[in-house]
Amino acid sequence: MAHLLKKYKLKINIFKIQFMLFMVAIVVGAIFANRLSGNSLDEYKLWSGYFLTKFPESQYLNIELFKFIIWKRMKLILGVWLLGFTFFEVAINYLVVIYFGFSIGFLFSIGLITNGFKGYLMYIIMLLPQYIFYVPVMVYLIIKSTKFCQNLYSRRSRSRGLNLNKQMLIEYFFVLVICLIFTIVGSIVETYINPQLVKWYISAINL
Image (tube, rainbow, N blue to C red; front, top):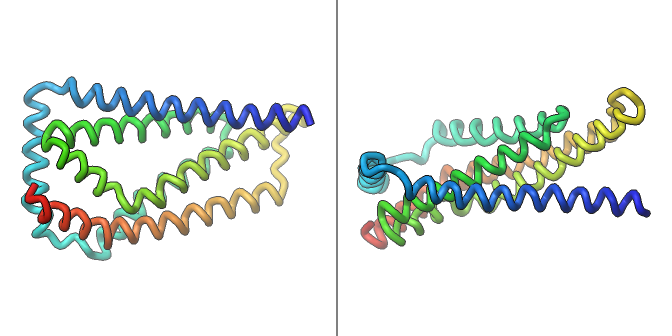
């Protein structure tokens, strides 16, 4: 009983650390965006203006875009999953959490600086609805890969070898399958639904 409580507390502590790092990274990303020089902000404004002008006229809905998106998303999923076999998996997951937190804070702040509250809302729409799938997948994968890594190397400390049994490998493989399925769904949404939402938003508010 005491051993189970110890393992549960360890999982909670890891989750707390990851959540705190995520929130801190968002703040740092926002601060970084606000401290950009005038020339850098002008470049972002120029890019944003070009994007807003051309996007409603573009024909992004094609199989090539889907291939690009799904390959990009799957590389991340496969990378995090494979890290579960390494002893430094927890540290890398911390870096992944920091990267996503920083990116979100930076992008939302840039949207707010360049186009005001309308730009802020546009970035939210650009992330939705596909991130309804991506975020749970990443949280689930990070939790499972961390657990797999801990089980793998805690057994090694007792037996002086990696005790990777068939059941552990099968269960962890099904984690990958589940994540890939939801990633495919998210990629379809990102390719065929998200661009239409962004086009509708841009035309609706005349941004």
